[in-house]
Length: 96
Figure 1 (cartoon, rainbow, N blue to C red):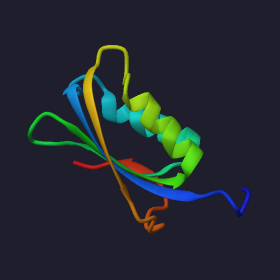
Figure 2: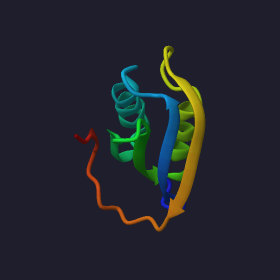
Figure 3: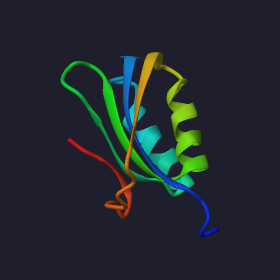
């Protein structure tokens, strides 16, 4: 890895038909393939929440995928909040 690669942290809220369509499992798979760290979970209000950390280019690839999601998802909106990179995760997982 290039040590000059900028590390970022993004906090996403994805709205639409994004629960019950395996969104978390696909997101986890893609994040792991990109070596992005963090977590994904379903929210009580029907949204999916993701916190992702890693190289800026790879986090952006994960975000781009979130605008489509898996085949049966209907993504209406992706809210992105950029936060300070913390490096607190060793992997990307699904939270309750």
